[in-house]
Image (cartoon, rainbow, N blue to C red; front, side):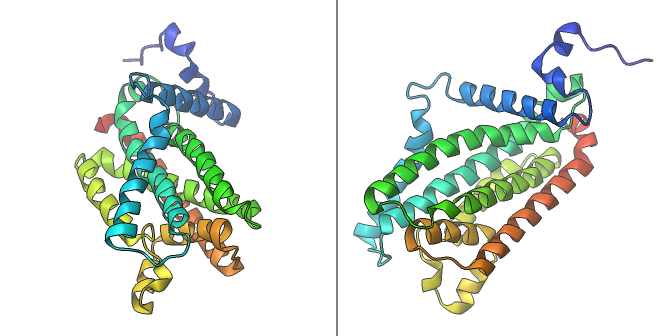
Length: 272
């Protein structure tokens, strides 16, 4: 039996623009359209709306700042900025990976109606989180500029920003692939995120740890990415080898996640 034709209303929708394969500009258009639509929908029924984008990490900052300045005082220089950099960037990693992991299931009906590269769904979901992150990052830069002035190495800040984005999207692709087979990944990833938070130098300085432990912590790519942010925004420190290795680890994670996802994307409509 032949496959029924796609309804006219679906063909004329924004999603239908992805049908011509190989047309990169149309794929980018659909990613942008879905990301913006999801971003607006995310805060549609919220009283505070977009303010939650900034408020969540600021509330986390308030809690940890109290704990590590009053209860367990930290000796890290410029600790408020040190902590803000870690929390704001980890918030993006957490939000993006969770959203992307669930995005395939949320768009399962769309996948069954029309063909398009399934990776577009993950890219669009990541784009939604990226919009929130950019708002937060502008706020973060404003705070740093107000408290410390404009850092001399601020022009290098796109490097860790891009590393964080591509690393996070790579992890998101891996999680989306796993979630298609194991629905418990939602709960499992919540536990892993808690472990990753405390194994990443968000509230502590990795270089203050014993060498045997700090070497282990540096196996976490987020450690290097957060390190670059602090090097360029706080410490005015540059080391090419450290930067290059961070870029390589981030790119390898992205490539691995994307390849694994694309090898399994043909099975995705059948799994939901």
